[in-house]
Length: 242
Image (cartoon, rainbow, N blue to C red):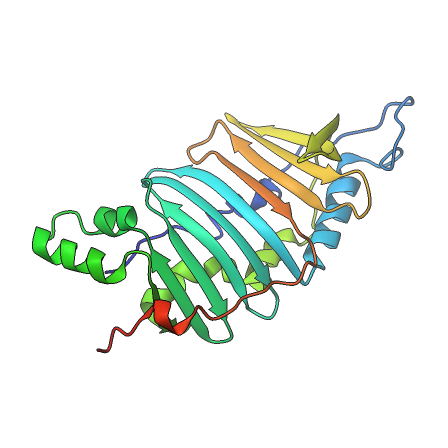
């Protein structure tokens, strides 16, 4: 059973940052940690700081032509990660990656979604065997790679490299209670928004895209918080070879 995902650079919308093209300036009355800095300067500083973390949590809610994708992962540069993902419907899968081993757990709803059109007796057997239990595979397995793209923090952070970006400063906001500065840009029908932490290290806290074909909201948190990825209990792992 192969789960088809579209988690990729396209999924992240390249963070909608490479396309930011409207320069912002400060008003004489502006105060706060970003006073005197242009929108591009704020974004590039935030990109540098975010790119320098060793671990973080990323939460994505995106609508695609293939359906809605929701993901929530804590990932480290070492490759360990834990998280959950749903694609299209209400079903959900949980993932733990530790070292080169990946543990995946499907709920009944996802198993049935992925098996539409297959014989009922086969689907029922798969549900009885797999629902709520972990399977074990190698990270290098072709059918596993698609489901662990959020575990590749090094690859994800490449999207946070500073460049010739520009953004318009819109004013203060809050993300999960943390004060932030909002920056926006409109390109055609699509509007991009980036919220940068205005307290402590100026990390990127949220990126949103609206008005395009794949609207999304991406939240970032738990910067440099260690990721604890542990092998599930042996009794909860299905031995597929048997």
